[in-house]
Image 1 (tube, helix red, strand yellow):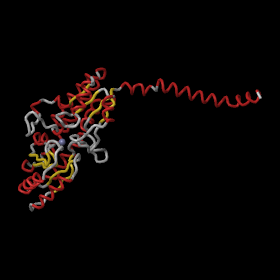
Image 2 (tube, helix red, strand yellow):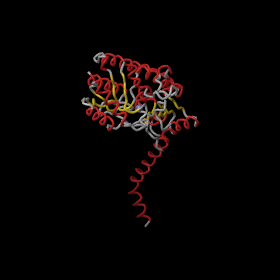
Image 3 (tube, helix red, strand yellow):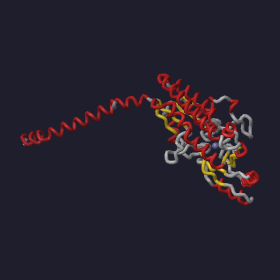
Image 4 (cartoon, protein in one colour):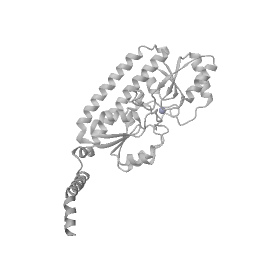
Length: 320
Ligand SMILES: [Zn+2]
């Protein structure tokens, strides 16, 4: 009997060695991790709200941070409600970055709570000179939040975010500063591109009609009269009176095209198109502009710079 046991045991020794080795390896891996993973855990965790901010922060933070964007492509930030999962992601992060000026209208209390928890919460619009902000018609104390539509204003927000990251993660500040300088240069090239492209569109044709009032900064910076079917926020229904008045304006001014937006349903702009037709004028739906969200890799508008160029190209092509 004992002989049999010893025989079986001898036969199984190689298997036992393999099992033990696998166990030992798994144990060491779980406890110590690989060198690469150790480095990964050193990275600060940054959470951003909008796709525009996510893109900006990825450019500045490079590979020294893990950047998570809460809102996906095509998501409307005015109406976005953070789920329990989003709150957990923000609570587990080191830095939270949001646009502010009530863009993330349903998330204000969350940022306040995170702030009082001692988390680094950066409001990107807080770095913009107040004189550059556009006051809304409703109140002089309420500003238009769509600051990314004027590249010079967005550059100020980028500088502020970059400097805030240096404070939050000082050991990588030199790296962030260099990335920021490079990104600002890229944004300056974008400004040159916009100026050159807009030379193709005469001043009298610069009337931009869109689904909501997102383009105020764009209009002010680049010389457009802008009109939105809905107000500064999308958190209100468009009345038929608005559509009728706008249709009359388009027909009277013979505006060649009106534009849908990627973060809003097409229904209101389609209704406008029909209303203009009823006034005896035919306008076009001149394609879709990236408004409160960037695109994705499929449609090619996945970065702020690409989306902005696409908007300018679309506007010039359709209104010329
Ligand atoms: Zn908006």
